[in-house]
Picture 1: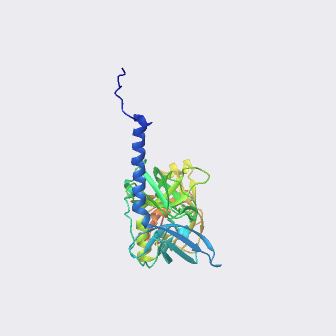
Picture 2: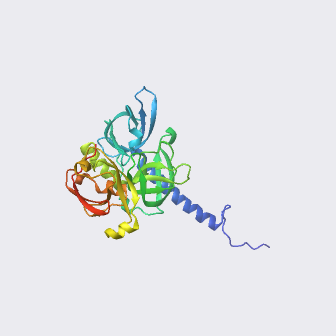
Picture 3: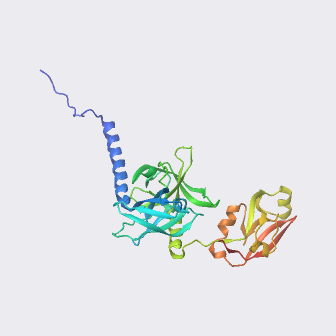
Length: 328
């Protein structure tokens, strides 16, 4: 006579395998739910060159308003003669450029929608945390609505755009980006936009970047309102330098770095009497250690407003009054 043993039927899975399967199912559901939530808001952007009808390039975009405003990357549409947009529904539209800001690699284009557009929710990028789920949605290599999953690898990165300016607060992710993902959204598990995918570092693996959503919204709103981003400038070309220890100690400077004027154009700095070789160390009492500090300080609010610039000239610090003009 045989005695039955008290054991459950596992169908080939032990308890650990079942737990792992359940975790994977939860992860898969999160990815699928987020993809379903935001995919209707992602568009394919194709640009055509001035030479003819042949497609010159393209990328992705995300719907920003119900009126047909779409956010994409500046480098996706910059210099294009014609811009075509394909919606999730298959609708095709020709788009017009509303505004283009190469300094942040953000552009806004607009279509005239025939049907109601789905606008995604934008998350507060200041609340993004390292390790959280991140999905990149776009059109890599022309394949429409492709989803890749990863995590936020780092926050607060700085990324230099094609104009040479830095964008701060950039989000780094290991979600795979490829040619054609540019301009598409990076989203969280709820389908909320964390940022706009803008760059990947080749040949490194897992180094992909997105402009943070707070910056994207600020730039996009100004582009829709004014068609451009207004910035102040001095009319100088500069280079970062290290100030000699003996000079720094003599002048009582806290920082060992400054920005030396290499050349001057006809502009505010020349009018104010600034000279080649002057080393800028502060603007309106804000320390200047790099060219990027000058770019950061000279925002729209400084246009045609008198500023006090501290420069090292020879072996002394001079205060120069400058009225920055608008960067064209």
